Length: 136
Image (cartoon, rainbow, N blue to C red):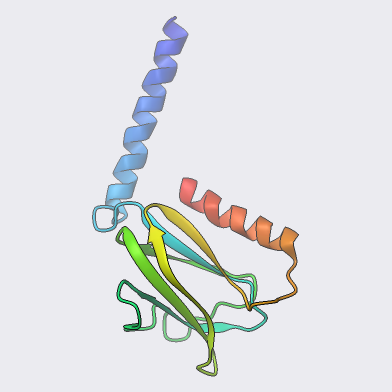
């Protein structure tokens, strides 16, 4: 019985430690809502737009010289709610758009052309890595 109590105490203490880290990392601003964009298209993505108003894209969310090459992912912290996403290639052409995504926790969005030939094992491996990074 005493072994169980110490296990529960350790789990409880660990929970407070993780919660403290999240607060220190800005979770009070965006309480647990994250969208990870995984590029599985055949071209680099140079612009990512996230909006809560359809058609009003605002500013590019990537850094000035940042690119998402094929099989690369990038996470964005958001407020929970309904979001719209658009990605553009480095020539300014739209690669992907998705409307009405309900984001409450951690969500993975795969950016792909309509009928792409995709290495599904590699995508699964990358997607699992993105999920695991949010579970730590």
